[in-house]
Length: 316
Image 1: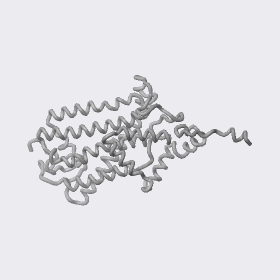
Image 2: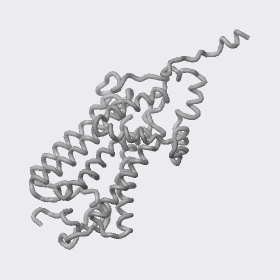
Image 3: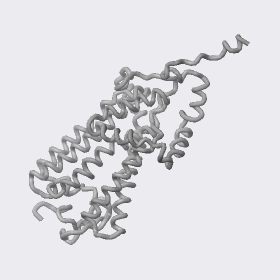
Image 4: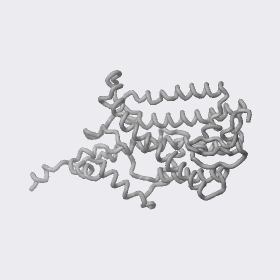
C-alpha cells in the first residue's frame, strides 16, 4: 500500500511550477490550453456580467494612458498561472465598445442630420467597423505574420539571431507553449485601439471647433494629435508582443514611428490638416449637416460632407 502511494507524483507548492504535474496539465490541456477550450470558456462568459472584472478593465484603460507596460506585466503574470497569454474575461472589449458607442452618439448629434437612421449608421460604423473590424484585421495580420518573421524559426530571427527573453523575463513553463494565440493578438489590438479612441474620438471631438481650420496653427495641432495617437498605439502594440519571450527582434515593431514622424513633417510643411480629412465621422457614409461645401463632396465611402469646417478645402 505504501509503495503504491509513493509512486504518485508529488504536488509542488510553487504556483509557477504547478504546471509540471501530469494530472493538472492533462486537465489544463483538456479544458484550458487548447484553442477549443479557451474559445468555449470565453463564449460561456460573454453574457455572465457578474463574473466579469470591470474594475480590472478600467484599471487597464487608465494604465494604457499613463503606464502601458503595467498592463502587459499583469498579462505576463497571468500566463505564469494559466499557461495561456490571452484572457477569457470580455470586460475590456465590452467597455471599449460601450465607450465607442457613446462617442458615436456625441459625434452624430453634433454633426449628422437629426434622424434615427443617421445616428444608428454612425454608431454601427464606429463600433463594428472602426473598432471591432479593424482590431480583428490587425490581430489576424499579426497572428500570421509575427511567427513567420519573429518566431523561433522566423525569417528575421535567422538573419539576426538573439537570445529570446521578453520584457518581464525568459520563457517559463512546460514545453510546447511557444505558440502565438490569435486571442492574445486580439487582446493586444483592442488595447492598442484604446489610445486611438481617446485621441481621435474623444479629444478630437472636444477640440474640433479649434482644429477645423485650414490655418497653420490649427493644422499643426491637428496633425500632432493624429501623430501622437498613432505613436501611442504603435508603442502599445510593441509592448504587447515584446513581452512574449519566444519572439525575437520585436524592436522592429517600432519602425512605423519613423513613417509617422515623416508624415507629420510633410503634412505640417504642406499645410495639410488631418482633422479636416480624417475625422472619424467623415468615414461613416452618413449625411452630415451644416453649410454646404461645393455642393457636398463625397468622402469616406459616400459620406456627404456638409458639416461646417469638416472636409473643407483651404480657403473655402
